[in-house]
Image (cartoon, rainbow over all chains, first blue to last red):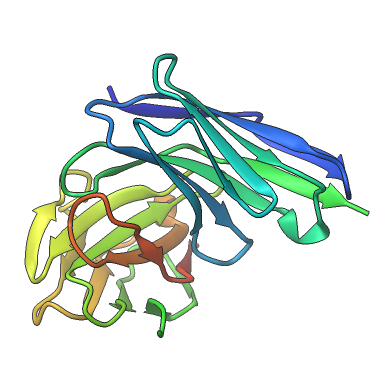
Length: 112
Length: 114
């Protein structure tokens, strides 16, 4: 069964600190993995996309890693800002027709 | 470039009533998706259209949910009759082609069933 599991479920950090969010997946056939940011009351917005051959990809203060052997990904946020408060959703594409398998998300709260 | 538009943004109805949501995808996007997102969970695909044809509706509760995309552009999702467990955010997304392309999401419609 195609599944995406994320941890932690929620996280509170202080402004300026770093944090790492985890994603484990069992999806076949694997096509790509995206991290989405979903602000409250809005739809998800793609932060990064990684294919099978990519190990790391950065987008500003966001850095995603992918280990295709262990089927794990992480999203590292550097020097967090209040605007980083959101849900971060790991999404794996199961090849063909862009079928997406969503994780439940990690709810991040950045406090001043 | 205009994003995915959805309306209404919020809807409150009583159980057993009917409700319809509307979505206008990004211009030129052939593929349109409807998702249901229950509070605290990730989105769940309800139905996927490729132009005006249905690609995947395996998770659509067809006894009460229906969707159409008659001209291959905008789409409506209907629930008739609504149940309490239908309370959720309904997200519409579109992508330029089926395959490994980014999906762009609308702001969603938050439905509350009382």
